[in-house]
Length: 274
Ligand SMILES: C[S@@+](CC[C@H](N)C(=O)[O-])C[C@H]1O[C@@H](n2cnc3c(N)ncnc32)[C@H](O)[C@@H]1O
Image (cartoon, rainbow, N blue to C red; front, top):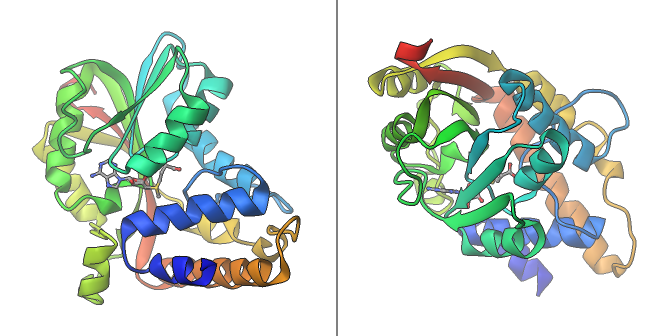
């Protein structure tokens, strides 16, 4: 059954996140963030490298005291939880389309400072105009078919002095992004390139103050991945299955980043407040 479930991850974005949550919980005894790892030093765990990516993003943003942060595409809520514990924003809202991820987030991480809402990044129906000091979007925007609508929402919900930060997997220059059309549609993969990102930003009265290519750090983040999954309380078949699944996943992610994708960070604000 597990094998069938893992193969199904190829079929849809919902199955993919269900399997990822299950694999992380089984392998590590608790949920993990759902994004790629970021290398800082040798012999780090997957969890440390996932935290590293959030920390790297937060170096751009600075002090969160008294701020309202919005995480768009918050997944299972672990980023919001980590930011709450580590950086202490006044209030954090996480929104996501996936109800299973939201259920995990609400069960484990909702408290008086953090709330999770079902919403679409391209609509943000539940987020009032000019209500957000800091918006972050970590490895989610490649799922949005209409990124211009997303940028329009950023422009609408940010306070005049607010800032936003997006990390996303984008197409490298020259990658037409036309292969595997059916698969991409099922998995909701709509990678933009940096040029398109700049157009969406300037077209919605936003400006990037910093753009950073962190592809090398992400590729190195996978170093040592074979030692991450330990055979704790799993039977041998399940353990081997997970090793195979994660091995394939890592190879696929790294191969993409070495050939036709880049992992980019975009930090910006309203153009007239820069
Ligand atoms: C790779 S996960 C990242 C989750 C989280 N940001 C993290 O870093 O762990 C991408 C998330 O984006 C969400 N997502 C995809 N399309 C979305 C949309 N249109 N609006 C809101 N969330 C979306 C998915 O449901 C998934 O939870």
